[in-house]
Length: 612
Image: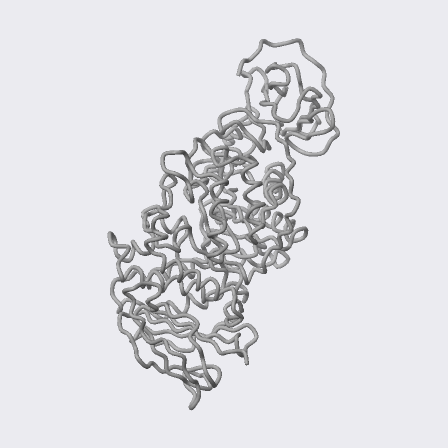
């Protein structure tokens, strides 16, 4: 970029066109930016040969500056040039830029148009959702050829569709420094990372996913910015002893986060508007079907603590309420997910009652006790009371207010491994690792809540998550039986065969709990009756049972719809019984009837009655 010498000043008039950043109109482009401490603002770009003063902005008198440039057009590169008194000129990227050369380069006047013709996607009901969490850069990339792209995900959509998932949650894709990242260091919140395919790549990916009936949910980061390539830092040149980062960031202790001192100042209306605009931007421009908010606890509390009223950030709480209210009012079918992990029911309570208003939240009350139960080396240490509490845990008497999982990007990194590797370090393919990791997966798909798996979990990926290590797709062939098991579980969870409607229901009754033998059984239902009532039996021990007696909710024949010990899932599984059974006789386990089942070691049965 060549910076030309100063030209004689030119008088500008503010634009009357609404909007922020770049606003296209026939014959030119309007620009608007918030820079309350600037004394002058200019636009420099390919449209004026990078002149510093050829296109001045006019102050609107409220901290905002705007102008209209008839020479500017789609595809032009540009930056804002800001003067703050006698200080040197500052070159800044447009905070609302939706396309960049790269995180440290120029903005690009973006073409907002995309042909959505044929996109008639309808969001599934939330009790039908099965979420697949994905990192774009590692899901299907080729080693030594840069990170994976949206286009490469599209190639795998037939596979994901056959697996049965109907929602993909992608980790953050807002522009970040360099080419490799988890995505939780956004430098430009409105721009799609160029290395992943940029705006057009995301558009095409969402369109393609929708054609397969798959929703796309995006992870957004509003608890901190950057810190790398962060042009919001001292954006208009102003800072003082407390406001080190300037207009976009808190002063004093409130600015500090586990990821650096860049917590946004939620107390400023302009900052709240900025993040509100960002949330709606993703939903509207890219037709995304939901948002997952990273580390909500660090938006609502400066210490990331659920029990620290002195650290509470009411303005952060209010921002989240505002965003959720707008989405629920205007696009109520789109889902908002909180990662708060403090077991706080107010996160998913209605804003009218004082809650934050999220649709659902990641459930720490499930993942940690279930992982502990399946990872523990000795059967004696598996506490079925804790398993029961995890199965029945929830928020505000609504099962869909929690997302349940045993693996996520956080649970398989930062010193933690994939579940099979945690079970037997260095021997993730062992019988024990396979059997007990499956046991955890079966709990995910049979407990009340919205089930989620992390990329590669369905074919026993064992390495801890790194943003430079692609998924090992060779494992899909090596563990094809495990992949089939996940597919079967997902289809049962979604009631593909009209035999397991209860798995989509709200109700659960853990009616049998044997902490000595490590067997637990629970009844799931939506309305009740054949094809709806479900009984799940889980054996958390190495011992098998040829005939194990437990209570049943209805008399008559119960058919085994799933047996995780089936040798079709792995040749070294026991194929242990798992027979259809008849319920009747005396009551047991506070159920009106009882029946005998056969179950293998570390195995799960799903039983229901025929609708006849």
